[in-house]
Image (tube, rainbow, N blue to C red; front, top):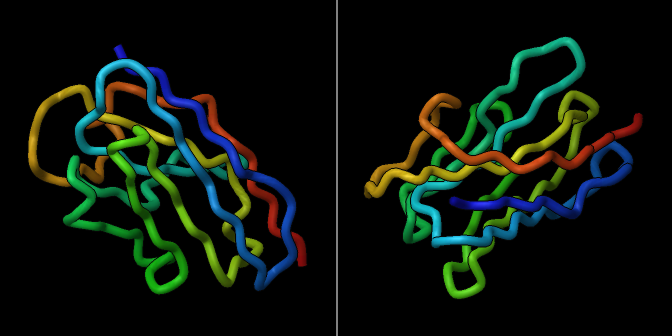
Length: 124
């Protein structure tokens, strides 16, 4: 079993930056990623990486602005978000797979474990 706890959300102005962190407890999770859900919308993929921190994938809308990384010694992943836009406003969720594998996962249904979410609000 894996427990995930996100932190780092908050209110920021357009063009600003935030860094989200996700701490995993339990066994070291395999592929991990970030998803987000805006009001009235489906939860969508944001970024993901494999269990050793490589094979990075990003949603087109965040490429060049967001950066995902992980520190397996600390069992954490991070999402550095720069040049934030109003449309980035959402609840951001950390996700982890309990299935051993070497590939990055980008589909919501591929993840077994989810954090409680952290709110990111970008004001214009």
